[in-house]
Structure formats: C-alpha cells, structure tokens
Image (cartoon, rainbow, N blue to C red; front, side, top):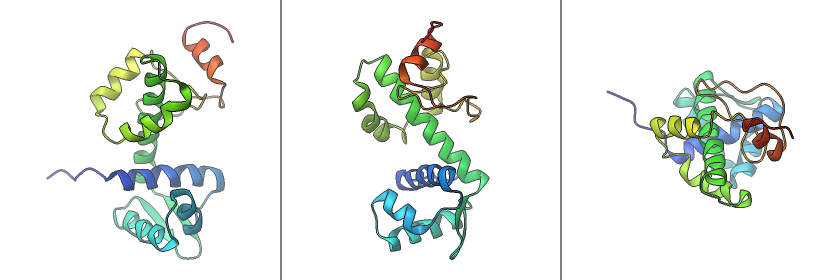
Length: 161
C-alpha cells in the first residue's frame, strides 16, 4: 500500500529546515518557530512528527537535522517552487515580484509529469528568475553561486550578461 502524500505543512517545514540548516548547520526549535511564524510548542510538535516519519533527526538541546529522506523531499519542493517561479515569469509574463506567492501555492500540488514538462519547456534551467539555483530532475544542484536574474536568463538563451 503506497504512503499517503505529505501535507503542505510538512513540506513547508521540511523546506524551511533545509534552508535553515544550510545556513546554520543544526536547527533549533526557536529558529523553526520564528521562520514558520508559529509558537515554539507548535514547532516542537511538528519536529517530533517529522522525526516519527523518518524525515528528521532531533536531539533535545542539540538541534535538528534532516535525514536523507527529509532532504530529498525538501529539495523536491524547492525544485517545484523555483521551476514554477520561472514558468510564471517567463511563460505567463507574471511580474517577478509576484511569482513567489503563486509558486508557494502551487509547489505542493504539481505532478512529476507537469514538473518534467515545465522543465523541458524552459530548456532545463539552472536558475530561477531571482537568480537562485534550481536542482535538476535528479535533485542535484547546479554548480556555481547565485546569479542575477538577467544573467541567468541570458545564459539560458545562449547570450552574454
């Protein structure tokens, strides 16, 4: 029997923890609570749930860190988000300042088939319209650092920045 899909809240926490641990190493309940705009008790309850699902290792007073499975889910959600941002900006013409909120709503419901079609239609991009890297279909990060959006668009089109 297949596992039920992870809730949007779980995906949001995993994405947030991934970004926090990338910046600081192990993540505290306080940092997660602040990032998610919830109480420390709510964040603690979710971290326990993530631990029970095998997505997070948490040691009291020592912080939390995503497991390999938790990282895969987080990177997949980030990939969806950034592909959607780029698609909304480049294909639908949505202003770059407005793509984040739309992508936040859509990142949880996009199918793998639609993700692949968007990726292909955009020419397998490596950076979103903000210059942030987009993991590839195998969830590997592109080499190089954050680039300005104009340089990213130019590189995808074969031009120079």
